[in-house]
Image 1 (cartoon, rainbow, N blue to C red):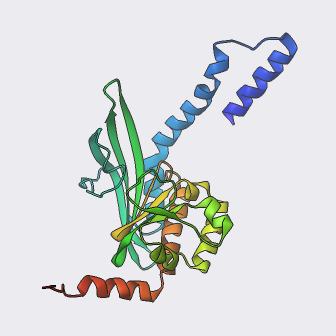
Image 2 (image 1 turned 90 degrees about the vertical axis):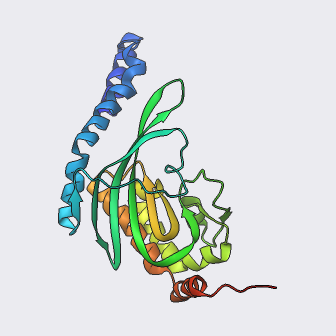
Image 3 (image 1 turned 180 degrees about the vertical axis):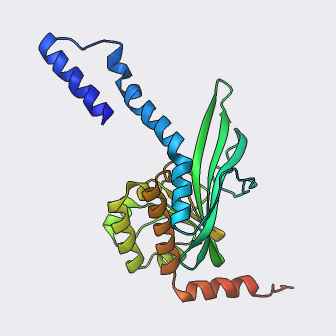
Length: 249
């Protein structure tokens, strides 16, 4: 809103006077608009998280002393990350799954300058470990190749990567795909979050997820994915995990 107002005011001034209101103000307009909104989000983020936790039966930890997970995917594998910390967190359940959320911060040392970064991390505990798979924005080349589905709308909105295409097709059933497309249309945070199956966890990582409705939307996607996994996938994964090793002479 602030950005639109500043653009309109400068546009009217330019039309009537043949020049911008100020050559300094013109390039600074985006910063004047979005910097205050960023500060507002930062000041309210913990209140929003605590409120959401209270409304959904989660336990909120304002100053969580959780260890940073040692997961083998970004941002947890960024080599230049320094002082990675869990700032605040909450625990509860989403559907039938134990769930947690934490705000992750770190300093990125680029030798020339040091910049601050953050991610909101969502976690669902799954019944058993599954093969690795990602859905959403992804720059990690270790996951596998992109998997295409029959739904062109789903392919346009969500990028799924896996080294096992058959597993990916088993996870994303037509019903799951339809529900994810619907959620993506209703909330942009869904499209800008990377979801990753790693072991027995489904993890969502995003720069959004600050506002209550964004938190709800991300957890909704994770519940839809977990609920949509067919029984044979769980049973096959359990059997593979418990099968004895065979010695080949």
